[in-house]
Length: 96
Image 1 (cartoon, rainbow, N blue to C red):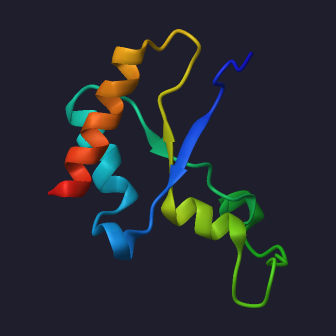
Image 2: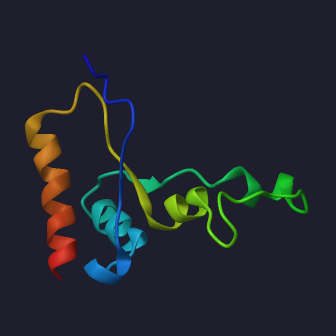
């Protein structure tokens, strides 16, 4: 059985015409907590100046996930109604 520990999504900003922060802010307006996916370690101040080896020259999976990802509310106690509320806000934000 899944405990729904972490629910995330990535968006294609060009296709949808919204940013992750647009969605996060729309959810916040409805008192729904969401946040960007975790900031990659190589971007943390403590690692400033440390050599980072991207996955491919000029492309980093972790950077892409951070730029386009959202951590959504999740947990085994979320009802179908809770889930639909989150989905509805996201869909309305994309359709604006």
